[in-house]
Length: 497
Image 1 (cartoon, rainbow, N blue to C red):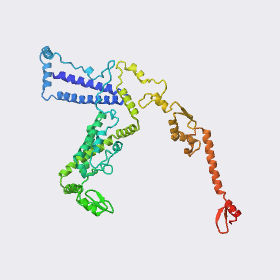
Image 2 (image 1 turned 120 degrees about the horizontal axis):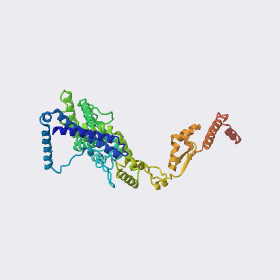
Image 3 (image 1 turned 30 degrees about the vertical axis):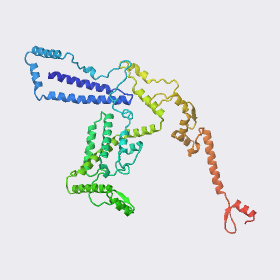
Image 4 (image 1 turned 135 degrees about the vertical axis):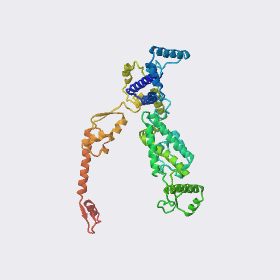
């Protein structure tokens, strides 16, 4: 029954649109909920495309079956056709009595949780613990692959986050001939694969296929123009090295101070391999310059594969610069934490993600209760929006008030905040309003009267020093030696003049 399938597809499309509308109207309070909602919407959009494609095929009616069914219904005896279709339905259900019936009304609605049930999300198995549901990157495995590369400059994980998309010296110590190994090829491939997977998981509603296609087109254009950094063809056989006092080896791109060392270097296997690779690159470049088709050389094809992966890593890293910066800040923050603080943060994250969601019927009644936080001691809120522990409150002395009259009687809670505020804009602006320009001498001073008194004393001392320097009388003896008046009379009393 083609018409029934057509009606079913129309209903399914309307239900999908309503489901997407309901989820867009939500305001998730946590990144986990927002990301789960986006993945659900992305799944609905994919289903809309599939169902629309099926519906278009029915309307096209290439085999004429839809038109034939319409003619059968519109001509002849209507009741006869009705009873025939009803008999077919009964026959089907007799053969398959336990066949479930799909309820489109419930298929796309959010499932309400029973008492004691916890919220489960589709994205729970998509991210590692370090990624924190797409907020940070987890490049620890890729960093280990990087450290296992030969002739590599060892970098810490924090340094690697700053330099993983740089593939030319001095950021990357591997030279061009050494990149032709399978180990480096696999490393760059795994890096590009992870970044692409991370972008797909964190941005499910964006048109990433179009973005990746633009990456490929830009690389193709740059490759054809011989404009890929680090992979340009060497057209001429002669190479001019940098201006040095020693002997330059163009094949290995190294400078030698001693002629004997250079001659011994020429006999090494590393130099021979570098010379062969450079000769092959020059041959490919000369063929290209001689109107030969680019890419005919086997070595050039391998270089193109590696260069394409490096180019994709650069573009992906540039597109996720914010996540990269957040990852670096998170790594620095965790390195400064103790093991106990890390465990407390992990427990808080698990408690937040495993908390039960409110029932759909009681969402309006419980929404006000969720926003209220039990905080009878008026403790400051931590990064997760909950009050900090009382022992931490006492440890940092956050219950001690420090009042600063220069800042407009602003009260700072805790010694740390009080010491920090002397370098902040509010305190500096208050000093400038009093006419004080040298703010470094007024630390620990919070009263306006004390600050004005100290500034007046400093100005009087400066003026007195200027007067003393200008009022010194110079005396000259018979030999032409110039000295202060006091020194002159002292020497004269002693009989030295």
